Length: 99
Image 1 (cartoon, rainbow, N blue to C red):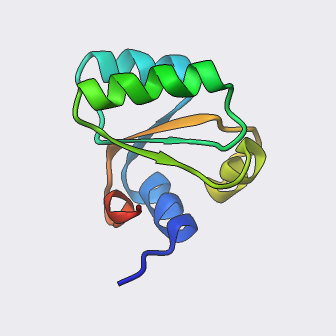
Image 2: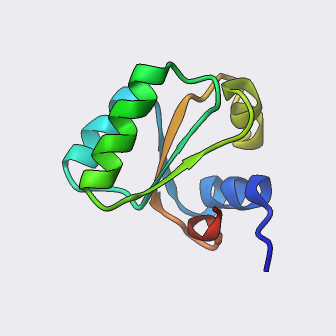
């Protein structure tokens, strides 16, 4: 079964709990919160590597969104660029199934 990435990310924003931003995601991951990290394709490499390492240490899923932060922001229904988002609760979405 193929999961529609954009639809599931939007459903997670609408029905679950999500936090946006690199600093917020890093802080919550280090506290053991969250289930999955999603980063945009144009996120600075050093920040992406830091978040990826923390996610691996904390055994959280990591997904690199194939488009830039502006597209990720519009998928989430936000009028700003999103470089990093942390799925705290998936709600009614199947976002944790995206590869």
